[in-house]
Image (cartoon, rainbow, N blue to C red; front, side, top):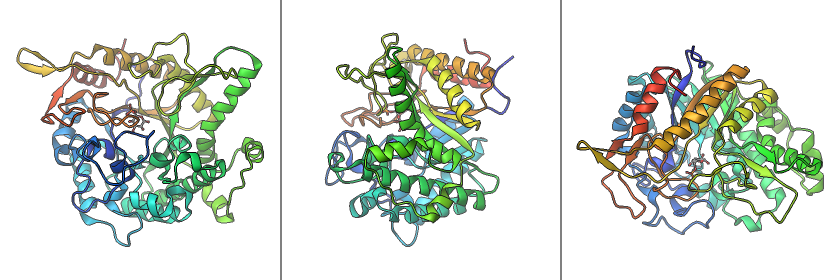
Amino acid sequence: MSKFPKNFLWGGAIAANQCEGAYNVDGKGLSVQDVAPKGWKYRPTEQPTEDNLKLIGIDFYNRYKEDIKLFAEMGFKVLRLSIAWSRIFPNGDDEQPNELGLQFYDNVFDECKKYGIEPLVTLSHYETPLHLAKKYDGWRNRKLIDFFEKYATTVFERYKNKVKYWLTFNEINSISHAPLLSGGIYTPKENLSKNDIFQAIHHELVASARAVKLCHKIIPDAKIGCMILGVPIYPLTPTPENMLKTLQAERENYYFSDIQVRGYYPSYANRMFEENNINLEITDQDVEDLKNTVDFVSFSYYMSVCESTDKSIEAGEGNIIGGVPNPYLEASEWGWQIDPKGLRYYLNNVYDRYQKPLFIVENGLGAVDELIEVDGVKTVNDDYRIKYLNDHLVQVAEAIKDGVEILGYTSWGCIDLVSFTTAELRKRYGFIYVDRHDDGSGTLERYKKKSFYWYKDIISSNGELLN
Ligand code: BGP
């Protein structure tokens, strides 16, 4: 018997800025990604530059029909994607939305519907309009709440009959690490105080709660969730000091979803505010707004990390939030430590904490793929990816047996796309290979990898074929 419920939402995930391209087409304004050719660690360029692979992406803007058809062939029940805010409100603070931008997503959602694929839409996936970053310093400014509310209202009204699953902010807990790409904050990171960051977080949390309220009002049969960068944290050694450090590090991430799920600030925040001289401006209306809590909790999961009080141990690489490497785990070519059982642990932990349905909306292996030709057909033998996904899904099944309620699973980058952290194309996640390379060359043709057929079988057997 399969452990996965009958209505389990199997699918894949992409984000506008990493796949659409068409960065200045049909009235789209610039987003922070259009001036970030090297990823989140670097300062933005003045203008979009040719070396920025995201300007063309994988040309999803023009090829979405072909791509959605391929997703349908794998049997996707759900497709997670984001709306580029700057396609709808080119500057972010415009009076009127851009009709051509709205039409594009109408077309995309209609195409999904044709195949019975449910869209799961992220309102803000690391792509704040650049104008909001430059003029208002992004989420540091309270005005962003109103701009976001207008944007959310516009898309809820427009797509209320087409989209029933929504997410507010992608990996909301990444803002202190990546203030520009995550929070649209133009001021260099080194010039920001903790107060600046936590005030920006507060604005995002209020905006998220207001979006939840609006969504429930405009689309009563929709579900809207939060989205966190999920990373289980283990103490490197079992000293009481390391345990406490681990608890603290976990809270740095749970801080966000604690508020989005419970509707108020956790008590542990008080001490943290006091010791860091953080004085937030929180209005009575904000307190009321925060009470609009999410329907489900979604997260990305790629890796786990360790914590230690030993300052001489260097942090390893990772999905934005890196940590002390775990001596018992292997790592991907990008140094992200692979930990399938960590996913089961994390699912149980989050479910114990909130008792809300969970949704795994990102998981996958970024790797260098080699396109080969077998019997005249181009493909990739990506057994390493199949193993990674299989091992993680086996743990999802275990968590379901543990009693965790899970709505679905969308594998990250189900078609190759531009990476977020390093903005490169050689780091591939897809079931579908896209012929485009870091030097900008390539035909943009799509080819099915071995994992394409594997995932199709997993979905059609509702997980029975996992091993
Ligand atoms: C998450 C982001 C995604 C995505 C993924 C993989 O942080 O939500 O946008 O890209 O990580 O990261 P990368 O593309 O850097 O491998």
